[in-house]
Length: 100
Image 1 (cartoon, rainbow, N blue to C red):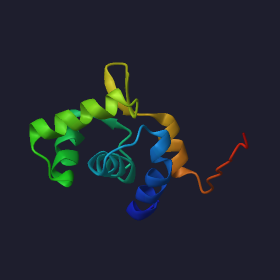
Image 2 (cartoon, rainbow, N blue to C red):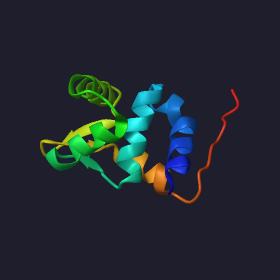
Image 3 (tube, rainbow, N blue to C red):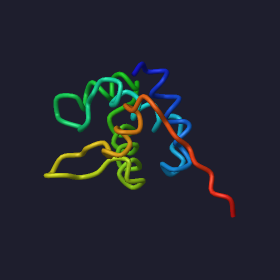
């Protein structure tokens, strides 16, 4: 999906993702749009440069994404939560409202 579609999906899902900030959505959008499902030493700098963040500011946002369970630790790697990737890659999004 294009960057705009990924961003729109993330904005729709935002209440379920822990109310991400605009910058957190941008970081996630960059990772998903570039098919980077994990943060490695190779793409870490690229993500930071694309997001136009200083090193320490970038690290703070990464920590916030970990706290919100958007980024998970698996085998000593930081990965994007697979559920989020699945939702942004799916051709259909179903939203159900439960009546109380």
